[in-house]
Image 1 (cartoon, rainbow over the protein chains, first blue to last red):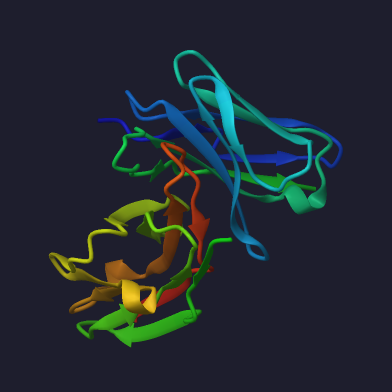
Image 2: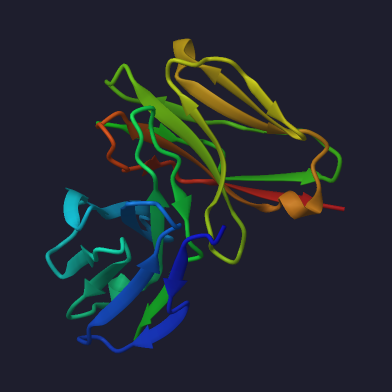
Length: 114
Length: 116
């Protein structure tokens, strides 16, 4: 069973540009969530999508956005990149059940803003 | 608000030693879920275990064991006979029972270094 797939794995962008990251969840999983990991702030929740609807949102500025498609694949976008956006962006997928979720992560996308 | 504390920033052990990683959590919910993840240098967060708040049974899986104690709000993780391949950053995380939502609050992680 394929795991969570994230593309691209590594990318370098210039300040002011925008970036789109892609995530394919585990087959059958309908919930996709995104996290940002930095040395200073650790792992922080960005947002979660379920059935193409944003269900939860973390405390990030509006430059961070996302969406989910009908096949559960998700993308996140960061506009007007800042140096502080350099981070590992992790996507996670889960199969929500009434007894709770087991949340699986992808390998992440390493973003460097110069 | 939820909070997860991993007081140990870094632990160094020699191979074959046992090591325990501590995790203390705070939540107002009566139903919640606790997780442990392992993060090797590649970056992926590898799922290790999920424990429901209403299930305090301790669990052993191979060299791994977990001790969940609601009375002290702790969910500690022990590796028996550690190996070099266990070197990684380990994260404890908490998820409230918000229906079927998936949102984790992570601790700051414990870096485990196992040497020969």
